[in-house]
Amino acid sequence: MDRPLRADARRNRDRVLAAADAVFAAKGLAASTEEIAREAGVGVGTVFRHFPTKEALLEAVFLARVRILASKVDSLTPEGAGPAFFAFFAYTVESGAMYADVLAAGRTGETQIGRELANALDGLLTRAQQAGAVRTDITLPDLMALLSGAVHAASHATPPSRDRLLTVITDGLHPSATTAISHRPPE
Image 1 (cartoon, rainbow, N blue to C red):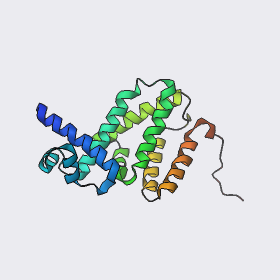
Image 2 (cartoon, one colour; image 1 turned 90 degrees about the horizontal axis):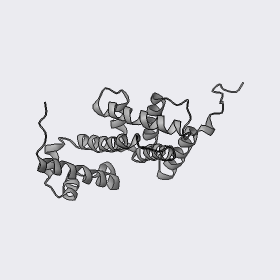
Image 3 (tube, helix red, strand yellow; image 1 turned 135 degrees about the horizontal axis):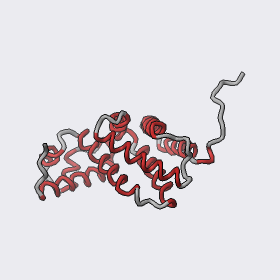
Image 4 (cartoon, rainbow, N blue to C red; image 1 turned 45 degrees about the horizontal axis):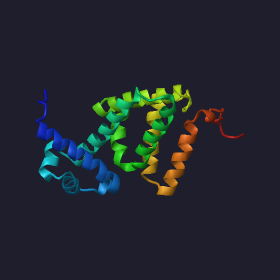
């Protein structure tokens, strides 16, 4: 069983996470742990003490965002549920390659991040559907597959192309997009 962190260690960990979030957002995966340590005002050893690999740090940053999302889901008003859903979807897709591996591991629900991501997204999806902002025939597995696929596609696209792809996908998630589409090739 893990011991709780001392107050100063908890503060340092939180500073590293906040700095990593900002630096990854600005520089993507090219960001170095040295840059993150400098931004957090700690030594690089402190970063590695809390996060043994850059991948562990990246996963922790994403998990922190998921936890913030999960903490807000129950308090979302119907007017806020749709915008929150689409904002999180866009943030994840726009982050592109940074979260591709995290999402792939999370899709199975076998990891901590997978379970927390699934729970947060399920709550967000349900609230957005109840508010009439997202079509009701979309399930959590559909959403996870769409999100994972969109992140993968975005990591191979130019920014203008990524923005178009995101628009096409989010347009398809709106209730007005539920018209029947034949998936059979023309005869």
